[in-house]
Image (tube, rainbow, N blue to C red; front, side, top):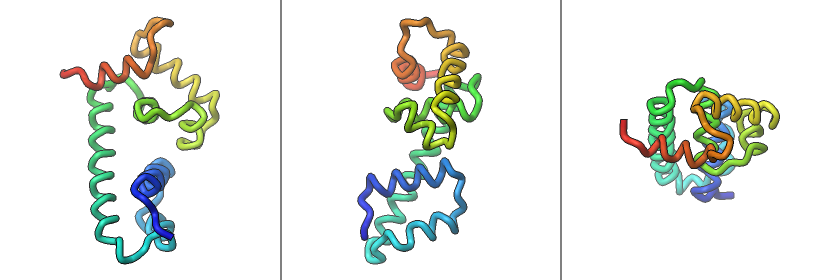
Length: 128
């Protein structure tokens, strides 16, 4: 079986969220990757990792008042994940994510009518 770029990215995001070691990630990918594609896959992994770290750093820089978990929830919101999907990804209950979203809104001083994702997009794109 061979993974396409989207499936590989999803696998890497899941591995990162579950805090898997590189050995565990290699074990997961061992049976899923066609060895002839390994150089391309290594390049994609490197690009993905750099992009992922950049996103996390930008969110941490722009929203320092949020906890690391809240920053991760914001990253997933910005990537169009649903509350249920965020809960699964982070290994938390949907009600926990809903509660965290409320805390994020409070820390960002949002009004009821303001859309969290829209505000996050605006703040992340805004220059410091």
